[in-house]
Image 1: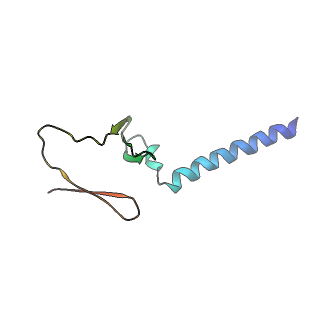
Image 2: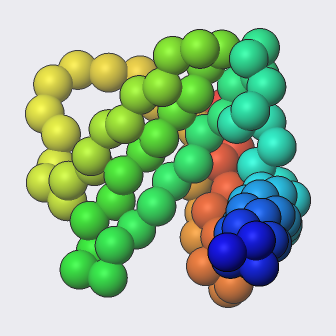
Image 3: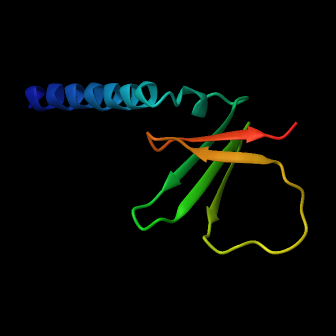
Length: 93
């Protein structure tokens, strides 16, 4: 019975190590910091995009649709998709 308890301890340590490596591999350590802001944009295989924003303790998720927006507004900047699939936003000054 004690060997099963030891296996459970090993699996627990393994799971924690996987979580830590996942956070460091994707540079997501700021998600755990209570005073940092993080923005993540994800795209599903069917093309739907979701923007997840964490500001201090508040987390917001917004789904982005392909329909055109209507109304009046001000241009804030330009977004470019790079060859590797990442996106860069350049604000207008």
